[in-house]
Amino acid sequence: MHRLNFKCVLAALFSLFIFSRFQSTAQTLSIEGRWDLTVNMNGRMAPSWLEVRHSGTNGYIGHFVADGGSARPISKVNFKEGKMSFHIPAQWEVTNKELLLDGELSADGTLGGTMTTTSGRVFTWVGVRAPKLWREKTPVWGKPISLFNGKNFDGWEVMGNNQWVVEDGILKSPTSGANIRTTKTFDDFKLHIEFRYPKGSNSGVYLRGRYEIQIEDTKGLEPLSIYLGGIYGFIDPWLNMAKEAGEWQSYDVTLVGRMVTLLVNGQTVIYKQEIPGITGGAIDSNEGAPGPIMMQGDHGPIEFRNIMITLTK
Image 1 (cartoon, one colour):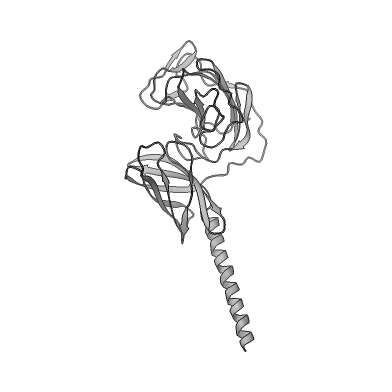
Image 2: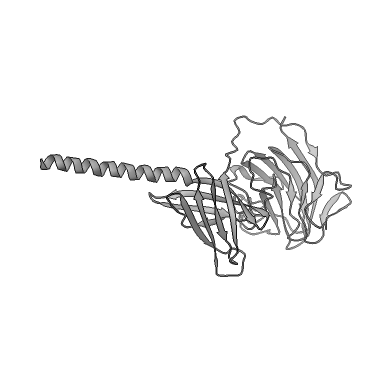
């Protein structure tokens, strides 16, 4: 009789263990992954991004991208019974307060909740799972197409008060101001673009308007994702190929799905690496849609020329 009870207890404990493991696995499968977020900042729909991964048997960690700045690590993501939360330190804000994000996983598989900024403002947000963007077939490329005619703004749209000018075949932003983008949108492509900046300046080229390749006067520094040739906050280039300020430089980019290859001044610095998600300053978080080529004009003077795109057939 006692032996039978002991076996029953063991069976019950084993069932409880299996059930708890199943619950943990179910939670991991439901919250883990990458999420494209949209934050309603009093009517301005700001893109954001979240990645959650498990750490050990019971914990979660992650990365977060706000509407500006770079990807930031999350040391702990709380998740229980469909509810999640985390907090991270300020990045560029001058404060010791933290950003707080609370959310809940809905039955339809979406996330939603509130975000409290470091200034104490509270905004609502929604999130959907980010698409994988995996391509089954190797692309077949067409012929290069010029995106800039060297004469005027045909095919381009300034995103705010215009400080951009066209002079001598060069697209120039002589002072900090608005970004500029193509009116057309693109899916997979190859892009050639040449640029020049004065000493200490900063800009960027956004692929599909969502993934920034950093441009910055960083000659001689260790290669980092936040320096020239990096996918901002995500991918470090192998080499820092920056030239001296005032010299013309070039990017040759191939973007297929999320996979990016980049040559800086003719040297491969990134080869078929995955871009995890949108970078700060993206136009939106709708990663599954085509997007424009966008150049940053709000961080200092910058010049561009010879902008060529090659699309798939």
